[in-house]
Image 1 (tube, rainbow, N blue to C red):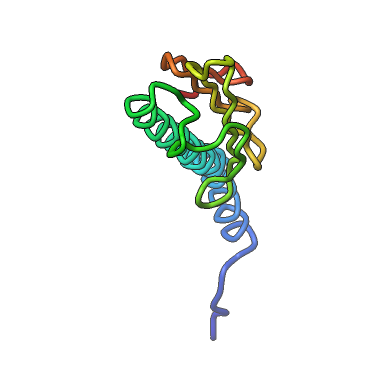
Image 2: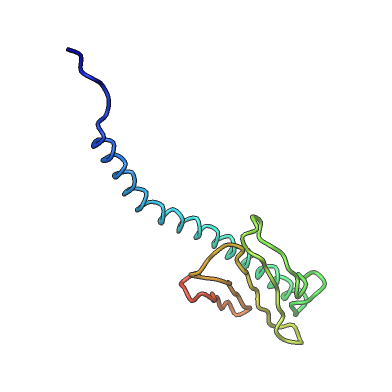
Length: 129
């Protein structure tokens, strides 16, 4: 007598259930890590831009010197996850505000902001820095 080889429906359903449980636990964590890495790109871009402006300030005693990034200059990060903007808040160009607006869905942080005093904020209110 020959016995049929293969999986039973119960065995197959158990494997599907195990895979579904693993996916339900792993996928949200994975997407959070991807969002965090994108957020890091925005933070690095803001810090780099702030460093350029501080170098200009030490040379020209102003944040709008000839070698400085221009006020109102818009750009984006290397991978395009954030749009960057420079805003000079005073007429004597001794203050600035840098903003990075996400081009992806980031409900926890939203727009990242950095000022000349080193104040770091996020419009979403989360702990993003």
